[in-house]
Image 1 (cartoon, rainbow, N blue to C red):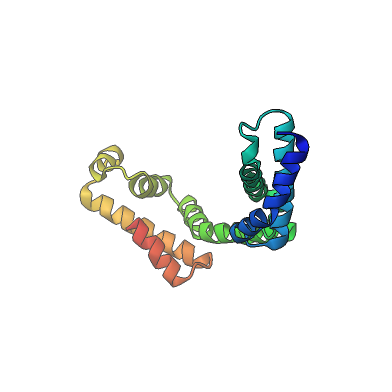
Image 2 (spheres, rainbow, N blue to C red):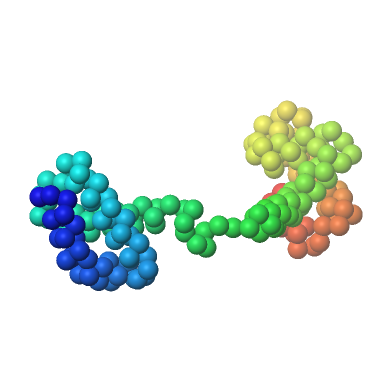
Length: 183
């Protein structure tokens, strides 16, 4: 089939192809653009000898138009509504950072209170018992304490921590939650 025959065939099928693409794509102007690109691709492939059946060039052009449409949808640069404003991203980042810092504040206050306990023994026992979850019997042997002595030491250390936490501005509901974590 020569070039003129192919062009005539495409011209004859153009209205039907355009109608099919409009229904498929939903945007008449975009369908017309995609069909134009599809026809150009089909003609280039025909000239290069890549079209197996030149009599079916209209279907080939339709397939090329659909492929151009799929490629356009994949291209993020052409998709409206997917670009964001730098200021909006910065605002989201700032809010999430502030939220994380707010969540970490009670934890930081508990760690500071733990470090502020007056004796090294209290700091070690509270840290190892509550944070490291070491066994009470192991700690009693290591610190040479009876079970009753250990209970008094840990109870007094919790009371000192509570006073330190209240002094640092931790509200009672926060404090109760922290103390439950330590109890």
